[in-house]
Structure formats: structure tokens, C-alpha cells
Length: 112
Length: 235
Image 1 (spheres, each protein chain N blue to C red):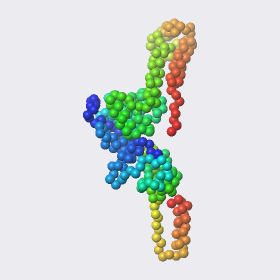
Image 2 (spheres, one colour):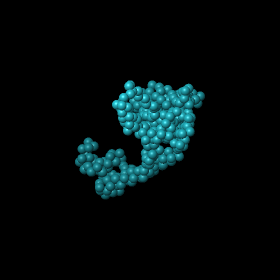
Image 3 (cartoon, one colour):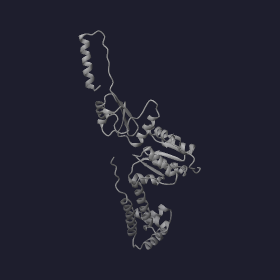
Image 4 (cartoon, rainbow over the protein chains, first blue to last red):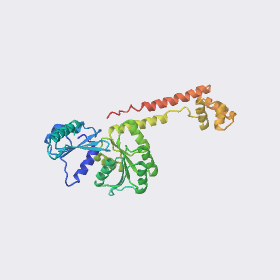
């Protein structure tokens, strides 16, 4: 998505040389197409790879995908993905349950 | 540098400050038939060293590299036969003209693809220029402006080089005595030169001579600037 031709060519060229990778598509006309896409990783060109707004929206639509945001300058890239988070407690106590609830709420506030 | 024969792979040096572009372009071009990437460089000095050592036929230069125009001039100074292709050129008049003036042989715009780059390299090796109509129009307009400037009579036409020099000093407000000191000549000699140049310019005073020089210089300058439209730097 939104990649300049030179950057798109370079990425396509690199991906097709890898035996365990394949391109499922080069350009998405709309974000709605994401729901039907079989891609595992979505590569997006952007001026602000650290801005979470676009990847958050894309992950909301396709949560099992990873979103690789690449700066148009080619100088930096950021990978966004949702991952299951697991925390094991020892003996269950009321205090441990409260801690678990607090931790969960805290993570949501932080956007984790 | 030897002349390129079509059966030989074109030897390329890739110069880009960003590693992803440098390595990506090198890999992409090296896999294409007819091209051979002999080296890559990320900085101005590194590129210049490699041009001297590797003797590429073409330098593909990402214009985002620091002091890229200076690098083109330095490469041309080192070996005029080396072709330089500017990649990611902003398609506005000042940038295109700046590239042309330092000796760039081919252009690929910011939104150009790798296929555009390979076509440009091939055309440059045939001695042709493959470019957008916008770039072509800018270059033609600039050539026209330069030709007009060359035809335009100058305020110093008909003057000897010494008289022209003295006219320039008069224009800067120097007196005959100051001019004599500046040029290490006698005041009487300066007076002779001033007398001659006033006659040749058909003016009666130093002030008029200086005004004539200023007005013609200004007209030339205005015309040159007027030929350049305001650059559009919108994304």
C-alpha cells in the first residue's frame, strides 16, 4: 500500500527471491479488501512509520496480520502486530485476582 | 574509459545514502540481463574513490545523497566518459537545471520505477535522453534563455578588458585615484581609460556610464529569472 514504485520494486524483488515467501498482491484499492486477503504481512509505505494510527486501524480490520510500516525515505521501518499475552499466577488468592484484573486494565489503558 | 559495446554488460556503480535503496537497487539491477553492478557507495567520498578504482560506465546516483550535485561535477572532472544518472530528481525547474549544469546524463523522477531506471540507463548508453515532457520542456526553455543572453548586447561590448574592468570599479563608486591604487597604475592612465570608455559608450559622465552598466545587467538578470517559473514543491 502507498509504496513508491522504486521501493515497491525493491521489496517485490527481495520477496520473490525467498523460497518461503510469496506475494499475494501488490496494491490494495481499499482497506476493506484486507478482510478477504490471505496475506500474513501487509507492507505499507508511509512518511511516519512510528505513527500508530494507520496500523492500529489496519490491525482492527485484520487482527491476524502483521503490518510493516516502511518510511518512504527507506531509512526506517516499524512492525506492528497483535500477540496473545499470557501471565501465570501461582496459588490463586483474592489479592492475585485483583492484581490480574488491575494488570489487564492497565495494559488496556496503555494500549498494549 | 573504453567505449561500451552492446554485447557487454553495462558496469554500474550505485550511490545511495539509504542502505535499503543502495542494496535493493544493486540487487535488482544485478539480476537484470545486460547490467553488472560493480560496486555501491553510500557517501560522496566513497563514491568518488570507487569511480576512480572501479571505472564504471554509469553511476546511478540517488539525489538524496548529501552534496549530490558536487559529486556529479567531481565524477565528471575525474572522467568525463562516465555517465551519471540522477535518480529521484524533483521535477521542478531549478533542480533539473542544476542537474543539467553539472553534467547529469539522465534523469529518473522521484516516482520512477526500477524499469524506468533501466530504460534510462540503456538510452543514456545509446547517447539519448529519455525523460518526461516536463523535463524536456525545462531544458529546452533554459537553452533558449542562454542563447538569448548570449545574443544580448552587453554594456561592456566594444570596451577593452581594462576599460570594462574600470567601468566595473566606477560602478562600485571608486574614484580615479582609488581605481589607480586598486589596479596599481597611474591616475593619468585611469583618466585616459575613463575618457575612452565614455566615448565608446556615448555618455557624458561616469555616473551615466555606471547607470548604463547597471540597467543592462539588471535587464539581463530579470530576463533570466523571468524564464524560470516558480517551482511547484507540492507533494
